[in-house]
Length: 409
Image (spheres, rainbow, N blue to C red):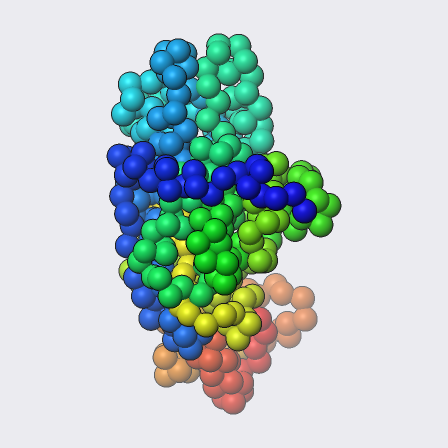
């Protein structure tokens, strides 16, 4: 394996600290009672969702733009982003008085687009994926001489993101493991380089959405491999191809890459809102999801607290509502069932009385008399119920069956 210091010097991260501090804040590290209780060991949340732009991305952008010479600043900068990198670049460019154009894929979250414009950047929509937007940004840079601020595959970007790792070591010197949401690998590579350069005994684990996980195949092949398709709610880590630099850093410094399902992402987001009172976007909840759903076995981790990165909190309110509902369903808080009852006066009242006595709340009731298999004197009732979780849902079903109702799910 190539010596990682030949492609990236971890000392650059310490040098980037003063530049990052001009734009970003030192985010808090707080205990998660929810995850500590589940794992039986201390779990701390590094809250980059509370960063000035709502994500860690402003760190790398601040370093990259601060290093531009006067001629480059006069020509302006361009970037490609689904939203978080866009805001980081736009803010850093604004502070230096530099023109900024950001290319976003179609369907980028409205809140991220508006925030980027509010920081003074021009926004152009291009293509369906981040890779499409990046290609458009590269074309604009070639045509105009503007500097492309890559979202992850540049030493300045990695150095800026790596300052998160320095803060973790300062805030929790006894840390045993750091778990990081991962898209293109800039945050993961930077944190891993910072942490492992100082303490080689700390484990670093990257987490990707299973439906947008480019690193496993790339690590196996030893070169960046592009995904043919992606479909995840975690737009912030939906990157179809790792960078050359970030892949080298992950190979050198990261212990493991794991993936999480969409249900795990939504359940973790719901728990962070409900239990920790923290608003986190789906991508930002990926590391928490990997611990909550058992993807990462706590027994296999070294001694010391586990630090979980909450990488961003820029979630559109409409999407947040959808994801919370998805998380409630995944957690068994919604129960959809079909009950066959006699088509007689009082039949529905008796059914709903049993549901009420079981402590479930009725959200929706639909009668269906034309379902195949129903007898002439029967009616199917479709119920959408609100429950307290999987155990309560099972108890509701069992009560209905004990009282003679035929149920299906």
